Image (cartoon, one colour):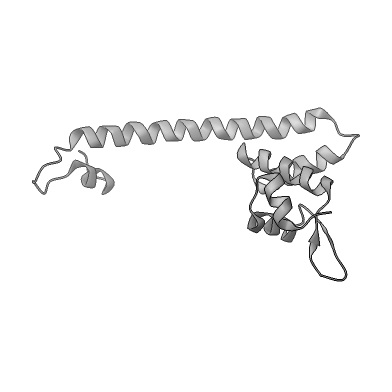
Length: 132
């Protein structure tokens, strides 16, 4: 068993994040009855690493909960896991498209601005909804 600092170091997460995951029920360490400290097992650290990787890939907390439940269910269908990952991938693709649109708009506004001492600024006009 180990304390939260050790679990944080081994999982690559901060103690604050681990406490949050504990508060929302994603990880449930035991408590030492004498000291009151949380005791994290090797399995808890494994779960934390799983959550860390899933969050790094952008899965929401809700999706992480579903994935963790499926991971722990040996009778799961891999199609259930794939459906979550596929939906997330579609969300990522949609966000990439939105970011590309934002980049193109901002690139256009920046190219229209002379960046000199004049008060006229196509960037501010564009943000105000006026044509540049």
